[in-house]
Every structure is written in C-alpha cells, then in structure tokens.
Image (cartoon, rainbow, N blue to C red):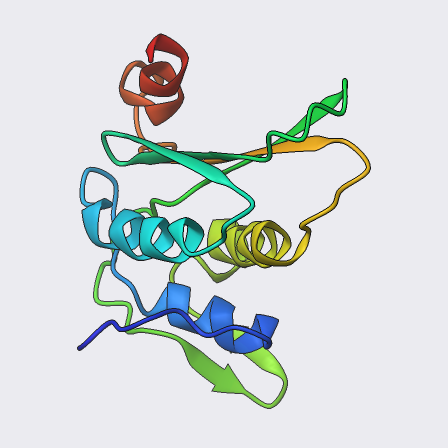
Length: 142
C-alpha cells in the first residue's frame, strides 16, 4: 500500500488514512514520517523529531501553553486489515485508540494558527508496551 500525503478537510478520511498506516509498537517510523511531513508544511509551527516522536509547537509568546499528546503506535495487528467502513462507523486497528485522537490533533495543528494560548502537540511512540520504552521518555530527555 502506498502512503502519500495525509488527507485534509475530512476528519473521517484522515482517521481512516491513519488507520491504514501500519504502526505497531516499535514500528512507528512510517507514521512518524507522514505526520512530520504534514506538520512541517504548517508554517506556524516549529517541529522537532526525537526518534519516532514529534513535538510541534506554536511560538507566539502568549504566556500560557497547553499540551496535547497522543500515541502513534498500536497493539499487534494479529491479521487485522486496514480501515473498514460499516455505514457511518469506522473500524480498524487504532481507530479508537488512538488514531482518531491523532487525527483530531493533526487537524487542530494544521488549522489553529492563532490560538488563545500557545499549543504544544506531542505525537509519541511506544505507548502500548512497557513504560520503560515509552516515547515520552525520549521527548522529556531531549
């Protein structure tokens, strides 16, 4: 399956596209590459990659900051296919935990150019495994 630019303007389609990107724990490079390319296209954000983790920030000097974080990995696929649509319901590995949330974060990061407070978006790897391997540890150490 080819993975081109992530869709914009349709949260459902974006979530489905993210579900179609394999990202089992310890194999988050592809989803991180796609998110990084997308976020770097948003001129209002500074983007830092730390391993397979991304930190994107507004730097407007607003005095207050909110952090939104979500993990990019999934549990083992165990023969689960990609995104499936049944009526108005999206099914697939990571659809609820947490690629739907990642889609919301990415949509906000793309579109919220003048927030009321500065925003930091953290997309991190390896949440579904031992806490000692959690990508947030790499982000905190950077």
